[in-house]
Image (tube, rainbow, N blue to C red; front, side, top):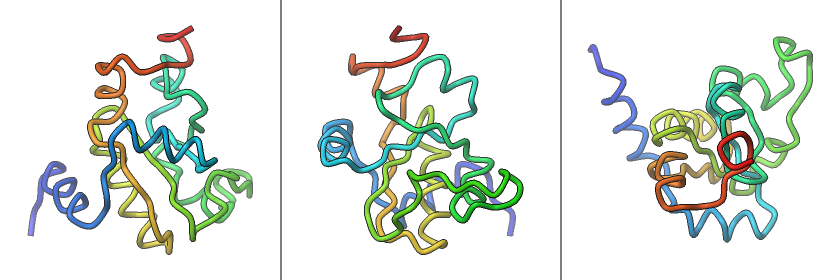
Amino acid sequence: MRQTAQQLVSEAKLRIREIDAAELLALQARGLPVIDVREPGEFAQGHVPGAASIPRGVLEFEVDGHPAVNGLRDPALAHRDQPVVLYCRSGGRSALAAEALLRLGFTEPLSLAGGFQAWSEQGRAVEGAAGQ
């Protein structure tokens, strides 16, 4: 059965939990990791303060320190039994990323509804080039 990317995202959103910006800030204040799954260039243009950059294309490999990323494991992905917040530009890639982390044994991967676009439109703080 053929599916569009949007259908995949819609199905992923049925299996994961999306959160809003206020919940992201509350979780971040508790010390939980926030991961930007956009490409490095997107991250450099501006990101949620304190977010770690782990592009969607290598996320699954970084979980266990895959040789494709020099055997390094990102500390933001070290605890599979705690919540981890993911975001992208609009919420699609982060929903797919959260679903992938579920399959890898993460108990509570969360996706920021509306992504960085919604975050920015709400006038939230931004680090990097867009926020200087």
